[in-house]
Length: 245
Image (cartoon, rainbow, N blue to C red; front, side):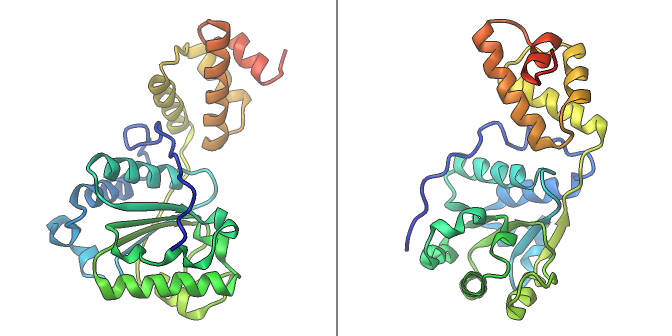
């Protein structure tokens, strides 16, 4: 088995920093799963999942709605309790060989981010299909994946893979509204120890890209600038970072 390069997951992307508004059910299910692993099949609250032939949960949604954040959160929590798992971002699959999936069925959790990245590549689709079949046979691993595409999307060219993906449970991860975006920025700033005035926060929210990925990237840059300048994060600092002066 070819192991991927070690991946350091963002430490500030955990369940505590995820704003659940509009996604309360999926967050609750994920927290129940990681609490129950590795003995998830005995957890009464996971009855609907334990009855599935293929224990697969797909987080479906557009870019930058927090799907990867939820995978990171699950992996962080499992690492904290020493439960074996592996995170793979399939956006990077071209750097790997197909045998990267070998043996993963023996883990407690297989976290596959961006499975849509292999759609249309028959060799990789077949490799994923084979992995899912081994998961069914061994009855040990839980699979959680993220995707932009639903299982029936014809971008997946292997009919058998589309069929297997449809055996799991799908949760749509919804975009945050304006209040949710504000809460998400406040939470991440607090985790970073950033002193963010309400005026600076409102300016940031109204003059930056609206998606969470861009907002968090901007916040990280502002954190660095704040440390460099040894100053509290201000409207002027946000303006300089956005080149609005």
